[in-house]
Length: 229
Image 1 (tube, one colour):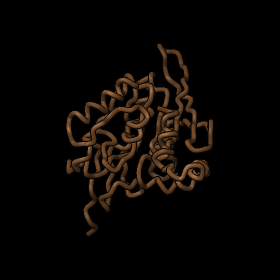
Image 2 (tube, rainbow, N blue to C red; image 1 turned 90 degrees about the vertical axis):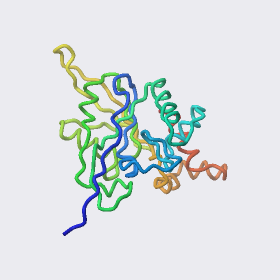
Image 3 (cartoon, helix red, strand yellow; image 1 turned 180 degrees about the horizontal axis):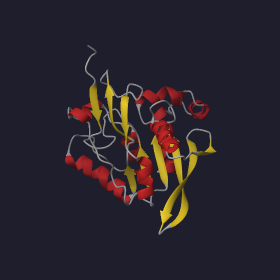
Image 4 (tube, one colour; image 1 turned 60 degrees about the horizontal axis):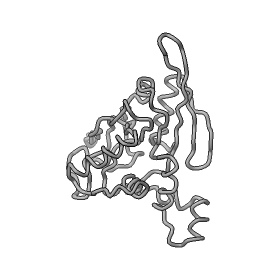
């Protein structure tokens, strides 16, 4: 008998799809968010892991004064920010199974995806997808490309330097008339500690670091993210 797989389901519904002009798209929060065994500095909301860097990065860009604790106030601060800036969150993975209980994308098996293409067709305000990671296997862009292929659609390269930018010409039906709208996708460097090595290998990062030895991988992401948020 093989060992029993851990069913890793997404604990949060997509947030603010109707009003959003931008959508943050990742995969799954760490398994402890599914089981509800949060750490004291975790926030019970999207990207709330105390090891994650998305909220600390946005906190620095927008000077939000966020709390990092498992309280309703911390959750409300984040929702308020997203509403004000019309930024939604729709991670692309609904559930996956794991042999090893960790947060790695590569460890996901039998992945069930959310219909991101369907959401884009349904919510015309969404102009930009912000992927929290690139096109590596089981990353958000990887799964999105799979969905596009199933729908006979594909991404067109606009910029191939990190963060890579693509355009999607999305067909939709407007009062019986066939039209298309352009959705931009931006593949940000993942806001996780695991991606720090990738940041360290970028020439742009090395150049900035040589000018200022204090400059670190989070500073680099703050620079990168501020352009797109």
